[in-house]
Length: 388
Ligand SMILES: NC(=O)c1ccc[n+]([C@@H]2O[C@H](COP(=O)([O-])OP(=O)(O)OC[C@H]3O[C@@H](n4cnc5c(N)ncnc54)[C@H](O)[C@@H]3O)[C@@H](O)[C@H]2O)c1
Ligand SMILES: [Zn+2]
Image (cartoon, rainbow, N blue to C red; front, side, top):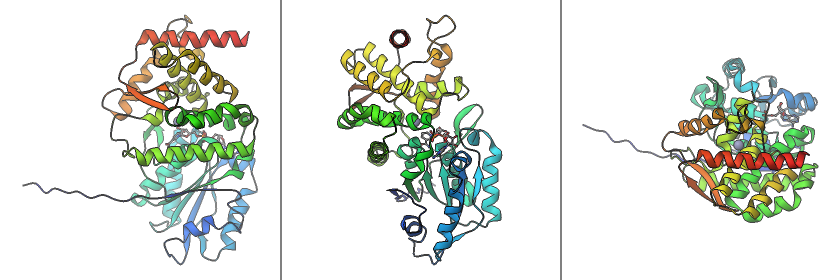
């Protein structure tokens, strides 16, 4: 006998864009935490240590926000975790949050609020997903990359066995609140790094957005907050649209278009011991894939030049020495392994996203090693000409 089971669950969450979200006059958070008609919105708050050291008054502001609203209750003092990739590499941080969920009696009607960069949100999101088999999770992304990309999606995770995001889950947040005022203290590298994800979605989905990026790249790089707010809003919108519109939010297929440029990026991050940041690696990975697309005859020289120029104007690199082994000529076999790891992460057939025009993507199922080497050499030569 066979009993067939089938059900579907509707997920929905709002992504808010605001400034000064912890000003007691700002209603977004209190509305989110009480939207289910609950008499009291109970929550714990976990904050990125790097963010807090740049913005030391934030902790007090959060506590004041909770005291200013009688319908809200903090179940524990604001808790600080390490900022950056270390928080995903050190399982003690994950267990610290699980322990807090236990001791503060955070139940499935309460909320775990994470405030920080993509790394902290990935770890806190994962703790929320597994504590009591899933507690409502509200994200406050505090970097460009997390506001326009990682924080608005449905994935979380931590690193294990020397592999990024090896342990994690698909667990949609309860809400995302993008507070632009958090971005002011970002270091220049983090400010610039996140812009590569906007370039990525523009290249695969939206010519007009690419043209906007091309036009304003240097202003964005030089910290024009107004331009950055538009970049984040449009990029988050395209990401969100893709997650829903592609009908595969939990990535059961083999295609990962939002990971354009990422097969090399993930490996470069790892090979450099994470000294290359994710967003920086994405810019380099996109450069390699578009140089490959040009070598394979998918895009013209003119398009290649336009995109590389925009990446440079955004203040990001288009080349890295790790493209080659010690000879400086042969494509790095360690980087090549990234292709297989990329396939393995999803299973199924190798599927790499390519572009044929700006805004139009398609999939390829193999990468020619010789063309990859040619692409890397072309980028190296350009880079050397610029450097001299
Ligand atoms: N879940 C997903 O779908 C997804 C997608 C893309 C990337 N990611 C992950 O996101 C992570 C990268 O995120 P990121 O680029 O935000 O970097 P990050 O989280 O490493 O943060 C960068 C640094 O900035 C600090 N910081 C954070 N906010 C700050 C602020 N406002 N002012 C000053 N300092 C601040 C942090 O402490 C950290 O040192 C990677 O682990 C990557 O794998 C996840
Ligand atoms: Zn990315």
